[in-house]
Image (cartoon, rainbow, N blue to C red; front, side):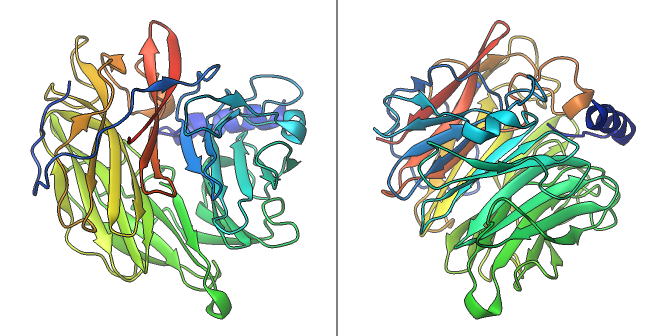
Length: 423
């Protein structure tokens, strides 16, 4: 759920709630041939969520989560978590356990600790978020309905070897990053720091892109959040001392276009190498951009365009060593997501780099069935139609370096959450 550009409406909702995608080659800056093929897509049984997030645990288990609908049931409205232990062939809906007793359903996100395999989750209900932890592969959860920061919009969570970080857009303070440590890791977040103010965002009343974190030993964890600016740029707020202080650096410079219609996304490839992707809408066209940092976000290279033909929306990025994966929804029609014709077909699409981002494959669809037809409204809560995708789809890399993707297919008034993986 995104606040769009209507903070008064968001605040009104907060007060009320706190009280009661054809396969074609696309134009790119560099081409490295085709990406490895994908298996036939799998419809996840019972999964009808928008904004599906995907994670792969150290043991190879795959998890997909998505919002249930803000405060959609009483007394609890826990967002569902789906699990596969056979590479995405079959799926089960996990038991929400204690999460079932608490509010949520607005926005959900999961991070998995790469050492312990512990799952950490956040589930938005606007007044705050229900935060939870599972140490047994989502068989059971401990949960707390009050993350700590009140009046929240679009929150994300990131694990860093025992410590856990949480970011939220708090109106009017800005982007607040909170820290949680053992033994209450993922359940209580007592340290709260403003990572980016509305001034850093250039006056943009818009929620953050995702959050990343890396264990830092005695010097402190590294943690960072990416966000759009009102001036058509993208910034990265980063900390090297466990979230005590933050420095904001530009990932993409100010432009004449708009970058706040989609979440910018950042990923950690390891060894200080960060990669980021975002969209820019300028006039009646849009493009997908990419940039990278070799010093964990302290400085960034020159942003470059990866996809400039047709129309793209909601790119997501994942990275592991020399591999960088980007998935997105794409249509051949040239317009913007909000202005394509009613006949425009959107397809779940993918491109990748196997040389650390130096070159990328051609963009191609991974599902022959259109994910949606018609406009994709990127205006958040200001939309009256075209919101079936929510605000993102997602990709992650598994332990064998294969891209795992989760996205939505829209049919009539229904949405089916899908899974696909490189063969």
